Image (cartoon, rainbow, N blue to C red; front, side, top):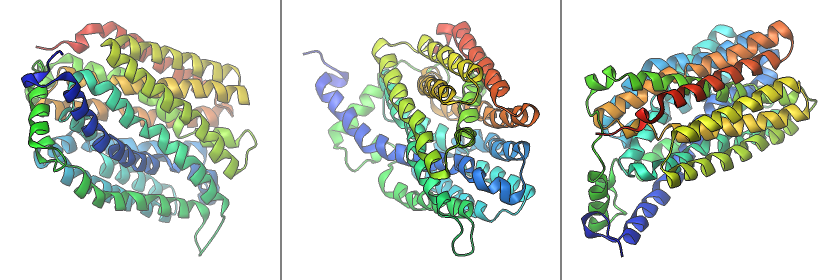
Length: 428
């Protein structure tokens, strides 16, 4: 039998990493479900909040997107703090503060308070996603990361599979206890993050060496396997900042994120416009995200099995481009919804493989700062995507122009990834 690091059998090694994955990834996914639910539940709240507060599409789009400016400002610093103080305490802080702010959004009274709460929510949540990507590098070698990142990121569409019907149900309750349905939506969906924050303290060890559920032999095996990895080119902050690949990676990620949030934050209103009730909208919106979950896990597994990242990302981006163009051409119909399902699945799949790239040449402090920097810049796409669709909706009365713009950004992302090519995967 072929032997693994430090003389351990490959079968034994696989069992140890599988044990770690089952202990960590589902719980991490649950945390991300709460995270994504709280950042995008505004899409469902808008079905009645916009009318109650007098928001037009541009006001809603700006408020939905300004979240990402707060996110941008604190993303890289947050990830560096996590590297210093440990994932357990810092993820606890992130979750508790964003849960409180998300619930407090129930009490906004106009555009300014709406903008302020969305901005603060971005500040509070900054660092969670890149922190989780960094955390996975503490546990799993590069050859396994795409599949586990995909499993973790599957929580994003899962949050909509769960959250869309729940949000539709809450909105269907109407006014209760002096609060409107959209206010109850923010209150009830902010509570899980606060509760899960305390679960983090018990269930998320900082690193394998601190995991009580691993034996000393298992800890040594993981440490040896990670130590056997080829050294990352950059371990420190200044060399990382001088590497053009770090900055260039933010560009295709920006295009992918524009597509992701352009769909996510507007899909409930697009579906409602087809004539569905609030409750029906919740169930219809869930369908594209079920397909997205399957697509991203399948693409992540394929990428690991073939040891290839670039073409997997690019092909997914081009499929998403075709989906958005078809949605624009088919106008607002059930066929356009099918095309948007293809686009959403492709966008999520591309994102799941993309995040296996930065750790291939970044390690240590450079990985903490670099992953945070790439994600912070790219997530400004979460501002421009919703704003862009809001502008097209206001100016043209439809979503077709916005879909074409999303398609163009996603096509550019695929082209740039191909242009950068294998340089993205170079190691020392």
